[in-house]
Picture 1 (cartoon, rainbow, N blue to C red):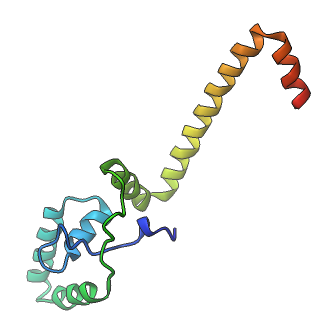
Picture 2: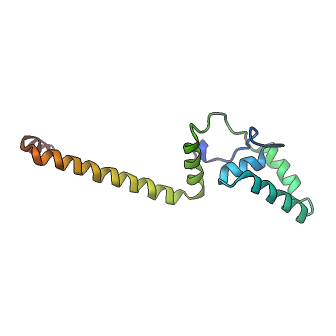
Picture 3: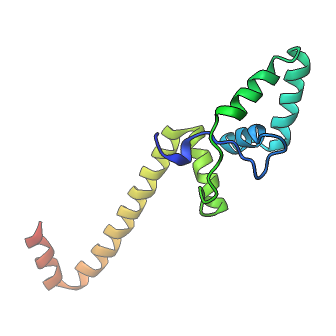
Amino acid sequence: MNSPRTRFYRDKVNGKFLGVCAGIADYTGVDVLWVRLGAMLLTVLGSGFLIPVYLLIGMFAASKPEALYGSREDDRFWQHVRQSPGRTAREVRAAFRDIDRRLAEVEQFYVSSNPRLSAEIDRLR
């Protein structure tokens, strides 16, 4: 998955300090409030270990491009892809199978009522 939509980015637009927590929330699809609370809890319980990690991520992670997603549905789709790429691929395959089945039904409807079209389709196969 080398798409720019599947990479981790700092989200400075929705972030408070460096946008790391907002980036993690965007990447995982978890509400940013829970990510921030988890970060604060880990900082307190981990005796400050998370602070240098947060700063390093803030320095080296790329900022989120402005036009990364076209819409909110696009954003949710890519979060779903990042969470489970295999399941997303199966869902896309299932959607294409459904489209193929429906097109076959339409073809059968038109072919059954038009013998000339049916013969032409059989010649093309």
